[in-house]
Length: 161
Image (cartoon, rainbow, N blue to C red):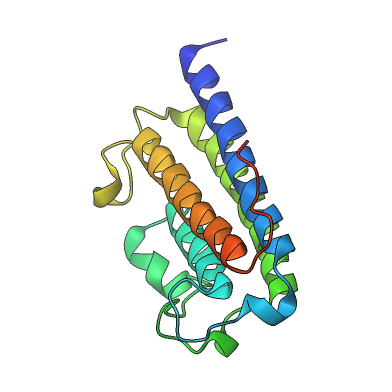
């Protein structure tokens, strides 16, 4: 097994753990608390939508200029009315799909060389490996915010994996 495939397999493992934590956190929110408060950046519905939007971007493999015209999650996650974002159950379906898309992206990207392939997005670093690590850190950051929202509601946060 090459160092490249070992690195890819380790990233797949950590992405899977991070996504599973996000999904479990979203499953714990009662529907009544999912969209509340509407005007707060840390509303669970906003955080989850932002993760979907960012993951769509960070796993995109086409022309970066074409991405904006093709993106599915095109609402402003902070400014849009929360009623325009996804309800909890549809969001869970999309989060599971995002997890699967992330894993597929890593496996396909790894075959082309994580360190040799340049990143599409300049702010994440120079290689696909940097892009993957950035995306993983981003998922973990917002998963922690979802855990904080669970705690504020008196609910059990998701345990670290």
